[in-house]
Image 1 (cartoon, rainbow over the protein chains, first blue to last red):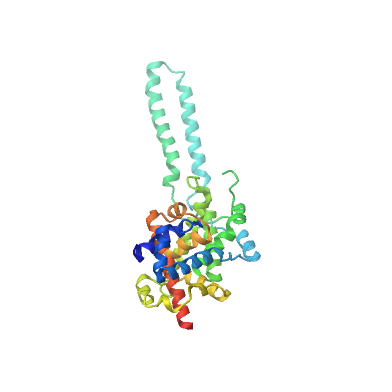
Image 2: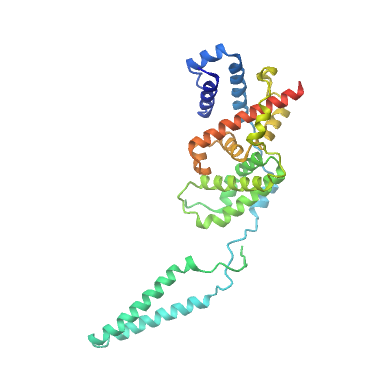
Length: 144
Length: 174
């Protein structure tokens, strides 16, 4: 076994985070190669030490500061208001009323009224559903 | 998934996120700023978190990205050790030092921690996640969006650079 191959395999062993002894072929190599033997001692020591490094804890004050963080939410579009939604709802309601009234008409007339009402109503519904994807995000208002 | 709220996330992850940012960035001031950035991003994104990934994976991803962004922004000012600079360290003679002499003194441990923040950003991230956050290959690969082979390479190179840096440091003392 050559040194580069040995070192590659040593790293792979370290990656497994296990305490398995070195395979025989690797063990045989370090018995005949002082540099790799030292390398192994060093790497095992480094590996163990890295696991032993104590965690650094944030101060209690910092955690409190995080908890009281003023979170800037996604900007509320300046163009947003409740009015368009109310208008849309009113349009839906009027379509529904028209549909109900059309039920009183004779069948041959009903088709000419129901079809456009349903088509426009469906288009409005689709546009409402797609609104979140196209809604403007301009503006700089924030909220907690 | 029902119990995800911002305060619970702070209670559960703040210490881990802080430790991770400290290890990657190397000082308290940057770690605090980065941790704050991470939690702002979490708070903003929590509503859109769909649970496709584990919550912890999502948080680690944000944390690592925040750290990498900060490192990249500051890379001109800091002393990040890149591959070409490693060549200089290759001159260090392994035989000059006793390999078992390391990590006895607290000061040397502190030195090791500082060296981690001097690795290149990817290696620093992988070493931090592997050793300090207790994540495995799969999780690291998922978080960094890298193939497992690249995670392994970064880990091996990171360890190798740490070894060379420590040997160089020891060489100065001899």
